[in-house]
Length: 192
Image (cartoon, rainbow, N blue to C red; front, side, top):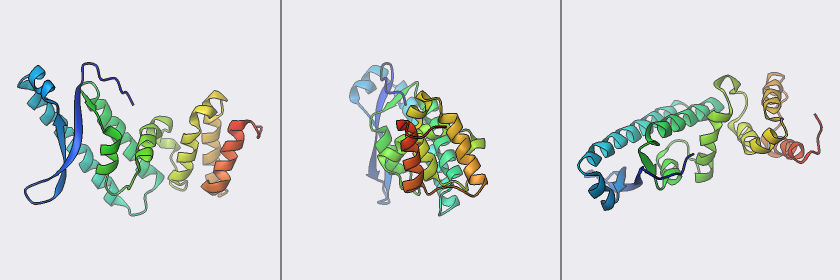
């Protein structure tokens, strides 16, 4: 996720009670930006809000789909995050981005760390590499080790291996078996 602010309007997502007493997300900007951008900033902020609320609406629909979330649900959520980010990143910088997304993505109950991982998930795995017989936890373990596996030129092999294990019904538990296996590979304790 890009964190360069130059030329972007910094915004903060906060939460306030509306007239019905329901807590809702609200977008705040600094007075300096209001004065420097002039009247056009209100249109930009409205456009931003519309995109943010549409993103939250899409997340809500996805969250209602299943009580037990599948790997494909997390992949779709990751795609929504990436698409929303690409729509706003040229104009806006959300100061508390990960915190806001974590708080507003009701139905997924994600920590700040998990939201950060979601930004990576759909970039690291194609839709065709997502198998709902494999838990999101397995994918998360592999995502956590991705950089080291790429250095060792093993990431693509391990993605294929995970799918093959699932196809054969031999998927290890993500804790401790799969995690330990990935730890051994990234330390060089296991050979190909």
